[in-house]
Image (cartoon, rainbow, N blue to C red):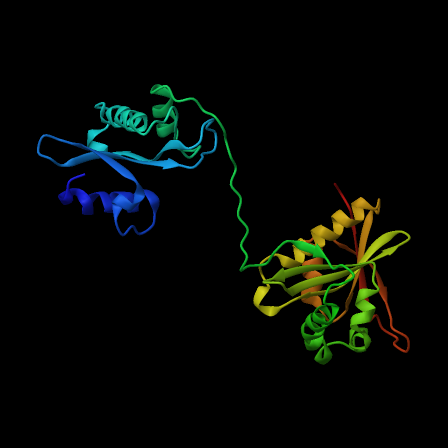
Length: 286
């Protein structure tokens, strides 16, 4: 690669890799194709990797990038670059060369096939956002139930000004939580931000103490907890889930109805001549 081509190649590789590159020659061997006026029409970037997925030998030559400018495609430039890459690999003592293409890049897949490349492996990549809410967990015996207790209390505080009588949550302790059949938890960076308790009853799985920290509401965490409760119920052969909600908390009733729950009965606390709670149930389906 000539010195005058360095900046052009760097910009081209940055477009391909979607990241900044200080020096294109740090990316390995760069072979370029030029037109009659000396302009770059395509390039192929090569490295010798210690090993590569789908290859049988190690170390192995590898095509890191293969590009032909749109105005110069279907003129044999891509083929010439790949043949030059194969020759380069042979000078390195390699008996095999590897490459890859996104499974949705049908043009690249077809180009590889036309040049005699054999598909060797197909890999599904996965990711998990460590900064956002994680998967639903079941709190084990050594979980920080004090943190769960604090989560529930701070999310139930608003009820004091709205419900009568006050919630029994105020009298609950971290030890009470730990004694329940299960507490489902969603964490962010190792700290609980949403939870729901579960108790096995003879005819249903009773869920309660549903709490989601304010900054994580509207992200579907309550539904994820409820879906996990359904899976827990199914695993134990339980056919229904039950929950209760105070009469005054109409916004919660709407959420439960949207999740597929049906109101089944009213209840009055001792000393009250009016309903103070509504009970909801949902049939568990696979």
